[in-house]
Length: 205
Image 1: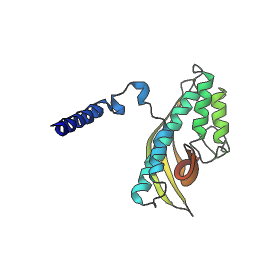
Image 2 (image 1 turned 45 degrees about the vertical axis):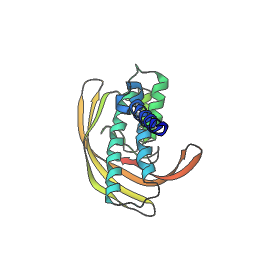
Image 3 (image 1 turned 90 degrees about the vertical axis):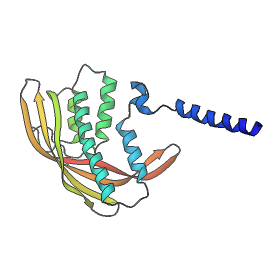
Image 4 (image 1 turned 60 degrees about the vertical axis):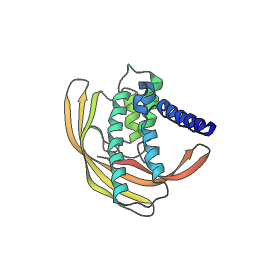
């Protein structure tokens, strides 16, 4: 009898615990925020030591498309003088982290010089030297799938439509291409440092 009572108690505790384990979608908005870094770590950690195949490469191509959208979001944060300076500085750091190299050539507006770097453009946006009121990226497509470009490195190309509205209300829509790179980088996971796959943006023109 005592054993049966113990079994019932264990089962009851199990269901009680399951009921308390609220999924992220059921939590408050403040708990639902998942940064691009968190999303990326989950994807890349999954493929830490596994060999690449078409399915995994497509997953990283999708992540690269999301990074391109993230860039547009960060640009719009940087050009907004109403936002706190600390917040805008953080947005600039996160935007630079999207690229393989902060000195890589990036073109946002067709009127810009062709040798502008990601760091230069983002700094000018932060300092309000570029008069942009809204920046959108849409119709992103993979025009060159990720392909091996040496040991532990893959390269590909995305195309997209860039829609830029100046402070004067002038809208400019152009078709651009963004190089994407998949390579292994070292990252911290708690007290450990691991080599994981990371997809990054390259030259945009």
